[in-house]
Image 1 (spheres, helix red, strand yellow):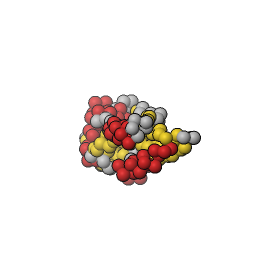
Image 2 (cartoon, rainbow, N blue to C red):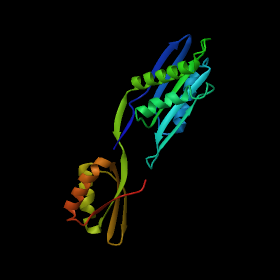
Image 3 (tube, rainbow, N blue to C red):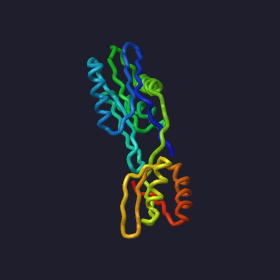
Image 4 (tube, one colour):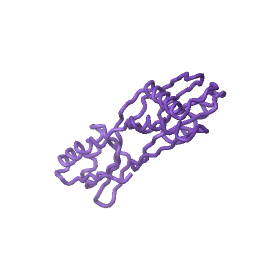
Amino acid sequence: MRLRTLAGEGFSQNLIKGSRFCGMAAPITDPSDLEAMIARARADWPQANHHTYAYRLRDASGQILYRSSDDGEPGGTAGRPIYTILDSQELTGAGIVVSRIFGGVKLGTGGLVRAYGGTARDAVQNAGIIERPIFLPFRIRCSTEQLGLIEAGLHRKGWNVQARAVEGASAFLTISLPDEEKEPLQAWLSEVTSGRGVLEMLPD
């Protein structure tokens, strides 16, 4: 399981029938990052009449969180086409702001949808797209006698221990790793503990 997101910031500008559309796409981790993007757009384009946006995030449980705004444009003509760019590319942890400086000519519903969607698409293209692994929490349960051996082996393999607990003769290690590394870890754990170590996936 991998996460598609933006490689960095991307900017775009389109001049359509006198109106200037200025796009900004960037990686974000929460809605406050999007608010900072809007503030930046307002500072960069104080003459803009609208600062429309959309974002798409994934929470700890894997659920998609999203929001969009037309910021005064006719309903569905700005925020929705911007969000469509994020959704169609399956991007998460990403936000887009498109500012419009009105040029005196009304573009109509279809014209606005194309202008906002096209400017958002260009900003995403300029930002670039990367894929990153999604890290999931796991717990290893083993005997205290095996604890030192397991910790040393995890360290050698680059699997970092985030938490450690001992309860009587049992020890528990919490680690975070990409889903695709679960099977290799399970096989290694079974080998070094002669099948006595247990790997459990924790709730997010």
